[in-house]
Length: 296
Ligand code: NDP
Image 1: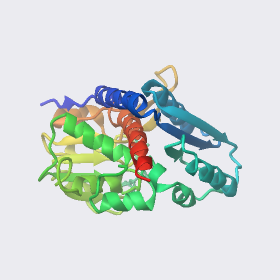
Image 2: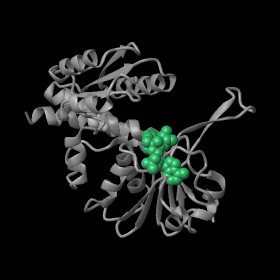
Image 3: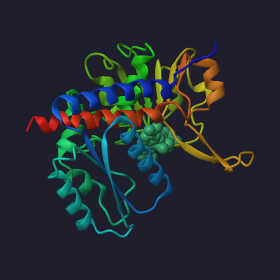
Image 4: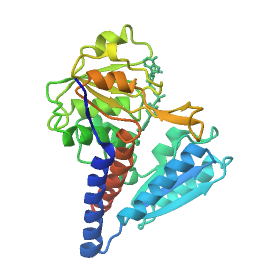
């Protein structure tokens, strides 16, 4: 058996086309253009790439963007002051601070300083709390939401399925569990979360109808850890040395892709799986932010 390859690029393109159309309608009918502020402190190369991609995508979809670059030694007070100004700026609907923040900055303080109505990353405790209570009417966590859309667009129902999530981070593992547990479409699953202290992790993954790997360990999930026909979602983005390539490195996921794809029923590739969805859902949250501002 060979798995269906879930094409994240194509599904993200479809989501982005909807966002562009809705943005155009918003501008035409209400004269409001969504605006996203992206703050980057420091010069981490991977963060620079992520920020450029987000800003570029805004441009492609008709969303205004404001890139705010700060030195690596920026003080927390300065950063919080900038966030306060953006909270009060009616042209800005969404605010995000690219992580990781420099070490003198408390990420928790930053997340709590952002107006929950502008929290397009869905990191603020108020928005996280809503999601965990099963209220999906506000912002949704970008990567898990993207995974839900990937599954739905591939005709994979989660209702009554056993989903096993590898990783308990606040960005991926935990909010993924919340979406899968919610009542209704995209939810209604039975959820297990595994982490570094889990004993006999493979005994859980072998029971899974759906495995979501978000550990940050290259090729962690092996073929003998899944059952025949399972759906495998690979969230991992790991750069490994590859002397045979021009750049000397390449990206791999948390799944041992080729052997797992032989056994799985469906699988997301890396790159071109979950990655493009995260940005697509960020753009959708930015549109939702306009609706939140209207509710004032
Ligand atoms: P974190 O490092 O925050 O969390 C990793 C999780 O994996 C932790 O819960 C950790 O457990 C668990 N873990 C680590 N080692 C093991 C092990 N040997 N066995 C079981 N569990 C283990 O990572 P993130 O959630 O932020 O990211 C995970 C991966 O996803 C990364 O590769 C990241 O680059 C990628 N990513 C991709 C995105 C996308 O858009 N495609 C978006 C966000 C992340 P413990 O809590 O016990 O330490």
